[in-house]
Image 1 (cartoon, rainbow, N blue to C red):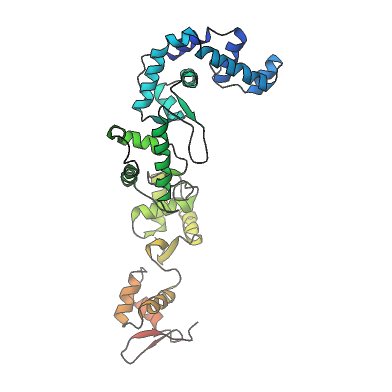
Image 2 (cartoon, rainbow, N blue to C red):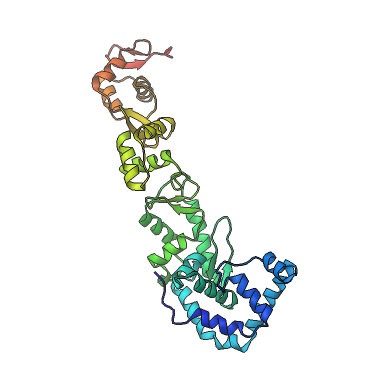
Length: 347
């Protein structure tokens, strides 16, 4: 939803450009997409048009910006720049360039005119895109630095494959921003600041984590299946997984393809006929006899009912299936107390 501006950016910029010689005007119009075409023109393309070097075009651009800032027309437009300042301050002092321009104008042409005003305004500072952050503008360096550092600490607090619900992440973020004034701790402002980061992102289900994690940037059937089962919170049949992927992500998931991907990915454990759980939940991979061996290895000799109870927590299988596997005398034996143990020479 666009923020309401009383100023008319196109009219303001037209008055500012009027102080420049024709060629300087044309360079700014081309560079910032202020004419019929809203696509910014490169230094090289403008240079070819005028038969000059790209460096000379850059010099003309810088000269034009400087000339406007020194002009009486620039001083006369301070109310317009002040309104733009207040808009940025109201959005949280530091805002991503895309979100700021989209909030202030509906059409690309008006956004380009506002962009030139930001470049010209003494109160506005642009932080260029880096590996960590997106292009952003701010009106207070100290607050911008605190937000950047808090986002870095927030990233460090997350594990590689961890997913966090948005309210939990915002609460954690708030603790990192304890030094800031109360009026900046607005939920909408906090969400805007989160979107500054390229290191932290949301997955299609609105859960946050490290941006490089496949749990956040889901790219294929396996990643979507992981999100579906994790969201469900308990083991699911592959048919149900495929249906849910289609419903949640609007991506047609064929049952056979889904089953195939679940089999291949180590994040999933087959715990019953076509039923899969997440390995991170503590389920063991392998056939039932291997699960029995893992349990006996961890807990020592156990009675039959104890073994069955423990395996049922790992596998959706019948009691008789577990009992049959216990009869594998090459792997398991029974002591004088009737408890099952792993034979030392078992393979």
